Length: 335
Image 1 (cartoon, rainbow, N blue to C red):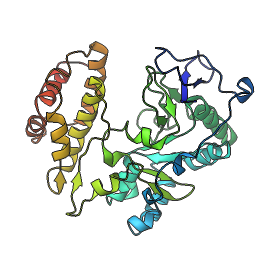
Image 2: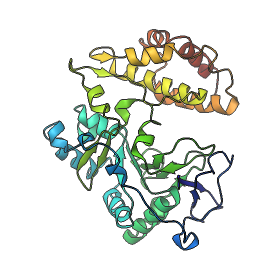
Image 3: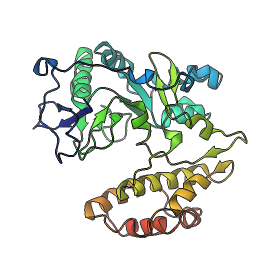
């Protein structure tokens, strides 16, 4: 078995998980194969747990990294920025055999010294496929009598599951989940491999994971912690995703641009990002179609909230001709 994909039947039916096996990678469309063990009696789950697939020296107790970090992580998960049902959901997923981690900005920012109230969003990842996640979420919310107050959204194009806030369904605290990234398929799919997941993220500093049940910080690549603070106390911007896909490259470039603008130039080493960007083929963006440019324009607006920022022009030119073209094209597209 490789992993899982998911289709979206007509509402209100839940998202429908499909099993992805070796040989399905290049099928061009998701397979129709039930994940119910009763439908697949010959399949047996084997292999090590995801957290056992990485070297032990890449797993850390939070306070061994930064004194007081464990308290800040707990404060985040119990604070007003995080939906109140989050820990109950993670525990319910664990009871069904799935592992869940806090990913992305939360562990990165708290390790960098941010206070829990300064973390703006919470992203989760794990081994549960999208359908299992949405169904488990429904069960948790229904047990609390709040299911109708927390609508869920699912994107079959990205396999991202979102649980919206009942107070403000567009601006309140929400929860985003996507299963561990799986590479090599011609359709969206998720898996159970922490290293594959890390290699699909944009920058190494965004590959950190936090396990709230075991109270552990994971650095699957063994590089994120060093890139958050090198021996000279600088942060390094290093691409983690080495895909040659033009759209993926453009997205990584935009995310690198975002963090260089956010973090400024003081105590920042952006040379790895710059070297990668300058090595991109000059005609990289030529194959992209209208849908891709719509997507990139939307991401541009997220990454560059202030198009008049004084450092924007210098940063774009520093990252080379592909970044310059990316800015020019995104400026002309209405997402």
